[in-house]
Structure formats: structure tokens, C-alpha cells
Amino acid sequence: MRLLKEGERHRVRFTLNGEPVEGLAEPRMLLTDFIRHVIGATGTHAGCEHGICGACTIRVDGKAVRACLMLAVQAEGKRIETVEGLAATDGSLSILQLAFHRNFALQCGYCTPGFLMTLAEYLEKHPDASEQEIRVALSGNLCRCTGYAEIVDAALEAAREMRAQAAAG
Amino acid sequence: MKPPPFDYARCDSVDEALSLLGERGEEARVIAGGQSLMAMLNMRLLRPSVLVDIAELGELNYINESSGWVEIGATTTQAGLEGWPGLNSRLPLVAAAIPHIGHFQTRNRGTICGSLCHADPSSELPLCLATLGGEVVLRSRRRKRLLKAKEFQTGMLTTAKQDDEIVIAARYPAAQRGFGYAFRELSRRHGDFAIVALAAVAGGGKIRLGVGGVAEAPTVREWDDHLKDEELADALNDFAWELRGGDDIHATARYRREMVRRLGKKVIEEARRCAS
Image (tube, rainbow over all chains, first blue to last red; front, top):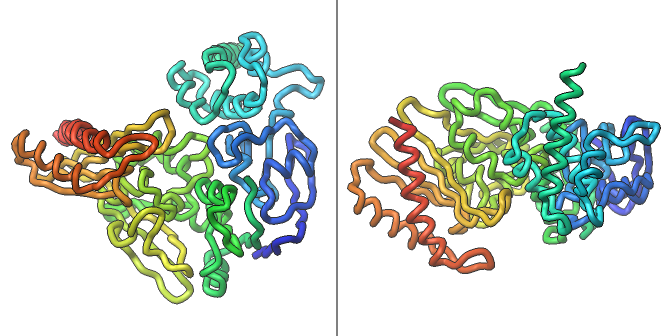
């Protein structure tokens, strides 16, 4: 058992978008704050901080989860992916990001990292998702600008492209 | 919206966790998926002095079926259960309820036993446990005991779990041949807390209806299945009043009663259709 004392900072290590990272965190530090303020990767946004809005969605061992409902110390040894990992290393945007761009699927952009990370898992597992299924999958992410129509369009377009790319091998 | 300070223990075995709870149970909270607990900590509704993390305990991550029961370990996630190949045939009521639990991102971490321990009156898994007549397995350093849903679910956000105990498994009765199961939920948006949630079982000459989101804990009634339509309507009306639901920001008490009457009838009909 590892007993970490309150008020003290403890070493936390995990891989962030494929790169090993480490930093110090008190037990009570949220993973959102650790990623943003200790590691300095500010792509993950903190919204409601109680699991409702989905802005802080990241992937932990491949699964989309709320970073605000996880402690930094719980991320020890995990494989973490954030929005910074979506584009290729040369900076070229992913299929999903390009679809968001083309479809005007963001305005202020605050919720966007959460939507992208949600869809990154969802479309990987459900490449044939219908519009209705995508709407249900996105129900855990709030956007106050777009009215969602453009986001759903972008998701459907990205899914089509991903299927075409998979078919082309 | 940051949690208050606490010690954090990442346990490597159930015994370790139980031993820590034996010493500091009163001031401790057990965390597995944390999908309710973390939100409550962030809002500082709770101030435990130590969090006992059991999330990484592989020994509690299992779904076993034997002699008519499906037993689900404490660290099995809701997504894990959702992906269990036996779900539709063995636990059709739970299969129908799972899509209503939060969102897929919260189901990725949230656990079945965690939801039962949190005991939100509107949540789906406690309602299914109560309606099916399931039970929970509790362990402390000193003993292991089994509690029926009705004994375990004592009220809003409260259960019969003692401070030094962990709910190490939930046990749901598996579907029986010739029985039908149905689930319905009313909420403002998909994934929101239920205004009214209803679970029905029909079979063996009985109909059973469980209602969540209205009373302080899931509440179940059972009737003979040869009730005439008007007798069933009366029974549902009595049930709707007995739940003593209140007014809140989402719905009035009167609206909730009406939903129990109307959706109650629909969900019972659906369960009967599945049974035949």
C-alpha cells in the first residue's frame, strides 16, 4: 500500500501522449490541474469541475474519462492522452480536427478539447455510428455556442472519412 | 471546486484496504471509480481524512454467474458490465437501464458497487437491485455479511454499510425463463438524473414495479398479475401517493405521481409482453 500524506507533495509519473512525464502533487490535486499547471499542457480545459460539462475529457488507457473526477495520484503509471496528442508530430491535424474546422464545429473553443477526446474514443469503437447514436455519445459534453448541429455534422463526416481510410487500408 | 485535503492510500489488496478501514473507517471514504464521490469532494460536501483507493484491485474486477445469480465485483466498471457478453440474456433489466447511467465517459470509470454505495435515490443500479431482489456482499476485517437490497438501502445517500466495511460485490438474480423485464426513465436530457425511473418484472403470476427518483430510496411493490385494468390503475395510484414525492426544480409532486401512474402502466405492459 502507498499511503500519501495530505499537505505533502508526492511524485506522479505517467505517459502523456506517448511521452513519459512526472511532477509533484498533493493527494487532493485533480488530474485536470496537474496536467495544466504542473505538466503545463493547457489543451485540457477545466469547466464545471464536477463531472457535468465534459470540457476536461481526456483518455486514460484508451478510455474517455473526466479528468476533473480523477486525482493526479490516481494517474500513476497510466497512459494519458489529451487533445495535444491528436495532431501528427509535424502539426498536421487529424481527420477529426479537420472535420471540426470545415464544419464550423467550434466558436469559442472552450468545450472543443472535450468533444474531440470523447469522439476520439467513440468513433474508434463505433465507426458506423448513426446520427442518433452520435448525439447520445455527445450528450455528456456541453457546448454553449454552436447548438451542436455543426458538431454532429463534423462527427458524421469524420466517421465517413475514417471508414474510407480504413477501407483503403 | 477543489477537494479539501486528505491522505490517499492506494491499496494493493482487499485485506490492506480493510485493515486501514478498521483503523480509520470513521473518517475514511472508499473510492473506486469516484464518479459520484469526486464530484462531492470537489463541492466539499464531504471531508474525509483519508481516501482508500481500491480501483486498482484486480481481484475485485469480475463478473461471475452461478446458480441463478450474477455476482459483480467492487471494481468492475459500468462500462465493463455493459460490455459483458451475457448482459442481455442474464440481466435484461440492467441492460435496459445502463444507457441511462450518466454518460459513456462516466461509465468508463464508474462502478456498479460504487453506485449502490452512493445510493442516490434517482440512480438506476440501486433501482434494478431493489426490483430484482438482489443483495450486496459486505466485508470488514472481522466479518463478511450478505444484505438484501431492502436491508442495505436505508435512505437518501445512506446505506447499512458500516464505516469499516467495503461492499466487495453486488449480486443480481439472473433472468428467469418465462419472466419479462422492462425499464423506463424520464429525465430532462439524456444522462441527467432521473425525475422518475421505473423498472418492472412480470412472471410467475406476479408483477413487480420498482420506482426511483421519487422516494428517498428505490421502492418496490408486487401485485398478482390477474388484476383487471382498473384494479391495476388503482394499485398504481395508491403506489404513486405512497411514494410521497416532493416538488423540486425538475418536477412537481403531482407530475411525479402522474408519471408513476402512466409510465408505470406502460413499463408493466412492456414487461408482460417480454414475458409472453
